[in-house]
Image (cartoon, rainbow, N blue to C red; front, top):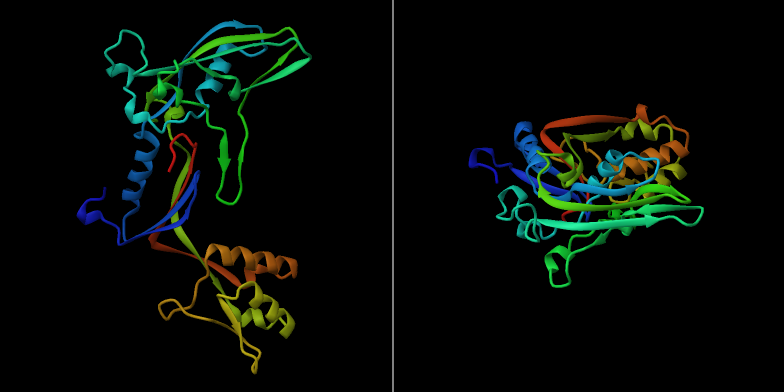
Amino acid sequence: FFLPIMRPDKVVWEEFSEFQAQLTFSGVENTIINSLRRTMMNEVPTLAIDLVSIEINTTIFHDEFISHRLGLIPLNSGKVDKFRFNRECECEERCEACSCIFSLDINVLEKEKLVFSTDLKNLSSEENLLGKSVVPIHNSGSEKSSFSEPILIAKLRNGQRLKLLAIAKKGIGKEHSKWSPVSIIRLENKPFFFLDLYKLEQKLNKKKKKELVEILPNLLQLDPIRETLSYKKRINDKDPYINNTSFNLIIKWLSNERIDSEEFIKIYSENNQILLKIETTGALSN
């Protein structure tokens, strides 16, 4: 992907899950990583609802509002490469090779009803396995906390009805953001956190020092004779830095002890290390 003169010295996966990823690039210009960011946002094709034909709408919502909500529902695009762009297809209007049709017909007889993305019915034939694979995505969250919940389209009262056909097509984020496979993507210089142990241990007794070491056993150690805190290792023989996980643990512990963290923790950034954070819509699996 990178040209030889632009290839990064090192790429590290800081975090990787179904919906989130975090990478660190070393030895490469911000402009190159920004190009990668823009490509992921604008040039990666997915499937999304593009045309909506509303036959009956007695809800309080305008047709355009409902159409917009339908377009932003992420669809499973794992087989998007097998679909054709509608503008390049040989069909006159649409066909199974370039489109997928959904129907929605909700007539409320009870007091009220919530209409979710699960109410969309795929009208592809049973033989059309490609079309049947296109379904709304309901999973979201992170590696530590994931959940499945349908997306709310509208809330209907007694006597209201919503009937429509929705056509999903292949597209890219450059045409409309609904086709972008990422919801959030940003880059920044990677932050480093420096903990001034010398100043901190002046405020801690032996018991508190032991507690801190128990929280960060891989980072800190306590001299049993001198009763002083020290780092277990140093990075490049310079003052040691701590990662995000250790930083969060220290901040939480200092807060519980009612100690001002700004006095002992300094934040630095390395110009040659770029952090790229990505959160996807779930349309494309890893």
